[in-house]
Amino acid sequence: MRLITDRGQVQTQNQEHNTEHTEHTEHTEPAQNIVPTMTEQLFRPAKPHIFDGSDTTLIAVKTWTYTVEEYMEFANIPAAKQTRVAAMYLNGTAKMWYINTYVIPETPLPDLKTFLVAFKEHHRSSESSSDIRRKIETIRQKDRSVADYGTEFESLINELGKGVDLGWARDHFIKGLGDVEVRLSLLSLATFETETIKELTKKGHRLQQAVHQARPRTSYKPPTPGKAPATPTSSQLSSNPSAKLAKLSEKEREEHRKKGICFKCRQPGHIAPNCPEGEK
Image 1: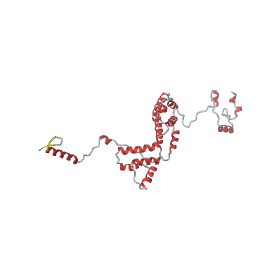
Image 2: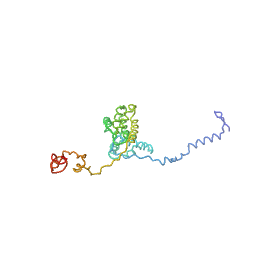
Image 3: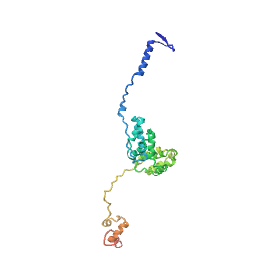
Image 4: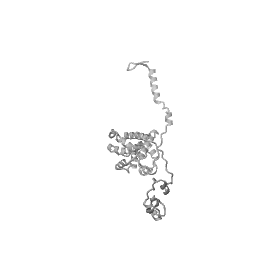
């Protein structure tokens, strides 16, 4: 039997039946098991390190929280279990904080984001904004690279939030650099007052590499442990007029006085005014 559809198309009853059967089959067939790709099979996200509360610096706390968030996402941990899994990577005083906050009072576990906010507030509560400002004003590069120094400096600036005086921040960033040549080079840049800490860090790192490459390399021979530098004797002093004995300290002068040793030639039997070396 031939039917005319509302769009003027012609189709048979058999065609309608086949179409309905196909649609029904598509909805009722069980879903096939999804086989993980080779990349998914080989990729294993790194687990967070154990945080025991012994290091509560800004970098330590931020690194742990970020690693936890990263792990939950790539390991596909269900949202309802993420906070409990995160607590498995706590130990020491940090674990006790978790127990006292959620386990003993039987408080329902919050979602991961709320938990990490509480975690950061607890472990960073000992530092006020004035403490962070003081760190920014006293932080020094020391033996680190400019890149590592800049990373910590920028983290402290971010901890203060918005509204930080960037001119004040840039001044203290440059002040904390260890190399005088790098400091002067950055200060001489025409764009210094308009650049961010990240941009200054990049330029400072390149300047440090250029300065180190330009400096001549000198070989350094460390002194033998336990061996004091040799002091010229009276005979050496006589044969070499340019050689000089080291100046005596007050303690040494007192010991020489008690033992009757000359202050000039360091020999016993006479005193400095009567020293035979002084006559030569």
